[in-house]
Image: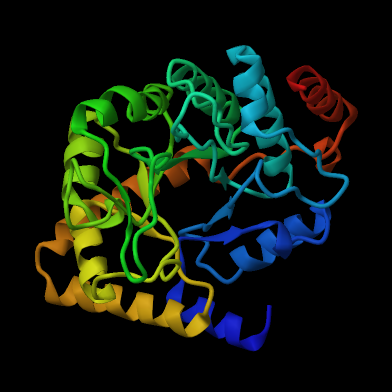
Length: 330
């Protein structure tokens, strides 16, 4: 927390903060860091504190070392996904987090493939585990954010300067990749993350993060999802389109929150251009109001979070659950 960051927070007043394990020295540090960051934002609009990868990037001891999602898919008992998600969320709440970017609902290509970040390559298994995980997680207070709509398991990198692509036929995409996200919506998931990946069957040009066909038509209209849509980290890829054009399209498509870049000058660029777009594009006013209502609704439902004591972090029952799942998964 240096002077430059404090000045940035006074200017931008962000909707929240996304941290990862590298920001945290120990669980008690997470509590203080989340509290300090929150003090720079108006108490009228308390910020969301988000952990980027609750199961993919271990937190320092004594936080519990959780098995990967692939272990749950191997065991294929959805009650275990519910139990583990609840324990993970319980520890996050104790450290002052309001949301975790989990679970990953993607299905890796090929029945024999194993991706530790995903439940399974078997499309029949994944929806039940996603549903159980979301319910287990959100029973403890924090919000779940399922990633990455509408399923980037088959994404293939393209040449430099081009977005990765999923080139599945529409029937395969709807039958195989979409059901886990339908399950998440049915479980009441609070948020969805969309990445900078082009789904050729839905939109030949725009990535999911700025595609009306993906966000507005498929996610909002067809799946009837009314939670938050978070666009993946800006500037994390070498975009093949003008970033300001992408930002405008993303706003019009229905993105509610933007995962800002780490560089402070780019954070200012993002903030200033969102303000300019709001002033210059009249049809964005309605989109802004809708996003504000969604964010306010979730703040009222999930904040302030009644945090459990910090002693729940790495407690014996959580460590026993993690060890049992690890042994059974082997």
